[in-house]
Length: 63
Image (cartoon, rainbow, N blue to C red; front, side):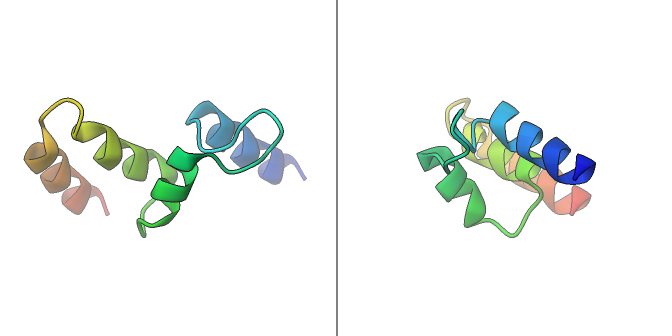
């Protein structure tokens, strides 16, 4: 139960879940990546900051 709560809190913090526990649009996008949630969000956010190539290299090294 504690581990599940931590996982839900993390997903809520990353905006993958809303306050009701439902999957957000960002959460749906994150679910498409076979990565940890933090890495998936980092890859998605990299487009906004024009650093996708760098983030993809870092993600490849970390996974």
